[in-house]
Amino acid sequence: MRTRLWYAGLAGLVIGVTAAASQAFFKVQPPVAYGFCMVCHPATMVAWAMNTYFKTNIPISQAFLVFPSLLAVGVVVGAVIAANANGEIRWRRAPGRKKYMSLLFGFLIANLALITAGCPIRLGLLVSYGSISGIVLVASLVLGIGLACVYLKFRKE
Amino acid sequence: MIAVATTLIVGILVGFLVQRSRYCSIGGFRDFFLARDTYLLKGYGGLIVGAAAGFILFKMAGGNVPDFPLGMDFPPLTAFIAMVVGAIGLGFFSVLSGGCPTRQHVLAAEGKESAVFYLAGLYAGIVYFFLVTSQYVNILGS
Image 1 (cartoon, rainbow over the protein chains, first blue to last red):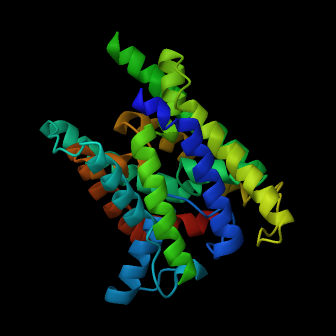
Image 2 (image 1 turned 180 degrees about the vertical axis):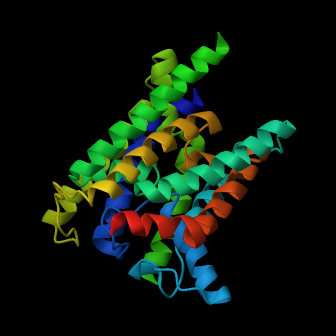
């Protein structure tokens, strides 16, 4: 099976190693364990654009003061390349209610992730960095996932 | 400039891998809780193991890995409580939305309309955070 060939465990391993290398050798810090975060990096991109074009004064990581992080752009480009190579790009419409719920969830998740310290991947990187608060935050994340699963089971019944 | 180029290259690599493997940080726990499926969960395990091995090896190799291991790095209590509540909410709403932010970027790239709306909300949420929410977070942290 194709999915098994590109094993999720291997993908996770590569994300972890490249995130560590980004910090250690390619100046993607401060803060520490910042090599990969799909909320913080897009946030620096937005902050950079707001500071540049709307003259706001939002604090930005030192690494991205002059040019913004392009992590989100890279992820989309990489996914388009992979999906295109395998004929998986097609417009899939969503029902009206689902669209607006997704919009709301995205809005909430951006705020919650920026309050927390980052996306689930960054929380994992903090655990790898030996952060005790990172361990508590991942445990809280898992608790939230568990509560949502209970809610989904309850709703199904 | 080197950091910017690195984020672009790492992003392309990770975007490719996530699209092919269906990696999702939230989906791993969700599938385990709902169906005892560990395929995606191994991805999150791989992330933690890979990053830990990387930090240790790169520190030994002379890389810039300050304050490793971080240890007891707790912020002020009120701020930390907000972070814990935020993490619970992050997990809860990520399951309802169908995946972690990385996965949603990949799904949007594949042409999934709901993921495109999710990203619109995510980026609007980031702007709102900087303009409004961060004021309250700063009060909690002080």
